[in-house]
Length: 303
Length: 68
Image (tube, rainbow over all chains, first blue to last red; front, top):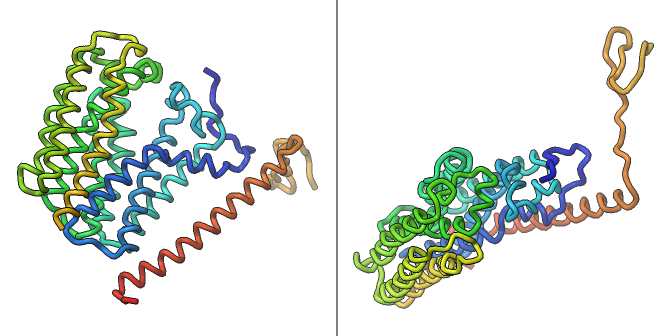
């Protein structure tokens, strides 16, 4: 692996496409979607422009997290095939610019959220950015195989922020939505880390398959999918949503658990033979989209 | 009077004088690429600033509760 130039004082000004790539736009879709659904599921909707601004701030906060993550992990990214072409490890941008961009974007998103909606939403946005950057990226990820279990909280904030931006207060339903994403994150990421574990091992990141092995990770995936499914149907069982949500999510969760059981039954250790893991990873993204879509559909039908 | 001069700077009347800034040697076409990127970034910054001003205007209208 060639050594990367971390700072080149005579570098060209970064291309705007590289600045955009720093924000990890593909990861942002799910964050924005869950935040939007959290906002739309709230009992009272804000004026359009304030709702739009709240979602924009969630997107900008997620972009700031992506930039700060890439700033901190530039050397690790250079060692992984999946991430080696990012602007920093590829030498298309200097590290200091990424740091300034990330911090600036984070401060801007929080201030705009506070001014446009309410300061509780701004505090939650700050907490989510700090949790992702400091607790997950800097502290947990390089140290423990349980990084994704605790770090999953960072990605669980958007629906809570969306709800609070709309209403100004917390409630049981957005806290359950937080719990669903929190419990969904480990099986989602462990399924991915099973078939890219050689990358994580090369980069020295202690992901569960690297530390505990493939069979143990498969058991973890299945075990975690059970409380996740329970949390997913809890809003319906507690009477916080209607039957549309309950029936959709019960079916979606059943499929998730079946796919997790197939992962558990798989004995392959080569990534090429990990079709059940790849299927579960792809389905887990669809699962979260469908769950939140069902939540919003249920809310509007109730109206 | 400059007593000595090289790439590391020099001393003149007891004070250190930094070396003259050397512009990096640009290859063919690099200057055009730098200018193009600067232009692109300036345009995008202008668009974002314009959008921000419009957004702030509508946020103010919404927060003050004016109904059109």
